[in-house]
Structure formats: structure tokens, C-alpha cells
Image (spheres, rainbow, N blue to C red):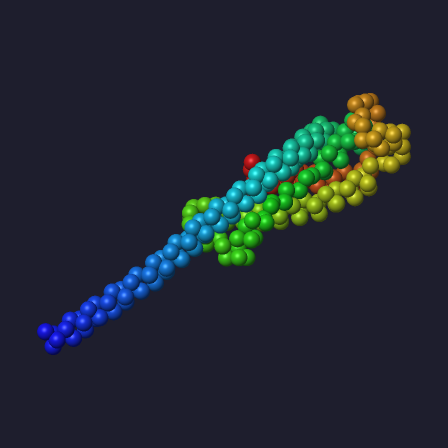
Length: 227
């Protein structure tokens, strides 16, 4: 019996080694799985945070865009009134004082600049890959590409605004606005249709062309991005 005890102890020891090895393998595997699961959960939370940040940026864009479009609509209406006046009076050498303020309004603008903080953080950190919804990623990319095109149009609009302001100073006869100086200071519209402001004829054609360009540019910007 003593001769058989050694082999049985050896077999028992071998089983223990196998069991310990299996337990180590399982423990390592579970640790690996747990670590990956924890990382996945972390990424999912981070994804939700980034998406929330993007949504906040889009809400800000929507609010600002609404205000910008209201200003553009008022400018477009003033431009329409001016163009109609010149259409009805092709040989006009003056304008009613009531239209004087519309010259400034037609040139006003509220530049739309999209909020890009969230998308820039996503791109710079490489975290855009965390958003698994491909359609959503494509929509985000398309929206911000669209914003870049609007930035180009905005630069044209700003340059044109400065050009229009200088052109107005050349076209309007300064002597005629002295009498309404007080109204100009407080920006109070003048509804008197009988008083006229004379224009420098050599600049009228250039002004009308500029007015049409501004109007079309404003429409183009609204076409690219809508609320």
C-alpha cells in the first residue's frame, strides 16, 4: 500500500496544478473582459457627453440664426423698397427723406457664425470615432462643411457692407441732410414724403448695382443654412 501512495499523491498534485492554471487563466480573462467592458461603458458615457455638447452648440446656432435671419429680412425689405423706388423713378436724382433710413437698414447685417467648440474638440481628440451612428456623423460633418461655405459668403457680405457705406457717403448730398440732423442722431425714421434728399448722379448706378448684389448675397446665405 505504501508503494501505491506516491503515484496517487502525484496525480492529485497534477490535478491541483491544472486547476490552479485554469483558475489563473479564467481570472486573467475575466480581468481583460472587465477592463474592456469598463472602457466601453466609459466610452459610451463620453459619447453621450459629446453628443450633448453638440446639441447645445446646435441650439445656440438655431437661436442666433433666427436673429440673423430677422435682420436680413428687414434689410431685404428695405432693399426692395429702394429698388422699387428707382424702378418707378428711373431718372431719379433724389429720394424721399423717408427712404433715407432704408439705405442704412438695407446694409445692416448680423453675421451668422456657427458654434464649433464641440466638433473641434471631437476632431482634435480623435473622439469623433466614439459616435457609432454613421448617419449622425455624416450629418454633423455636412453641417459644419456648410458653415464653412457660409463663412466665405459672410466675408463677402462684410466687404460689401463697408463698400456700401462708403458709396452712400459719396451719393448722398450732405447739405440736404443738415435739416434732419437731429433725427439722424437719434435714428428716428422720417415719414415725410414731401422732403427729398438729392443724390450725386454719378454714383446712383453703382449704388443700385451694389444694392442688388447685397440682396442676392443675403438670400444665398439664408439658402445654405435654415432654421
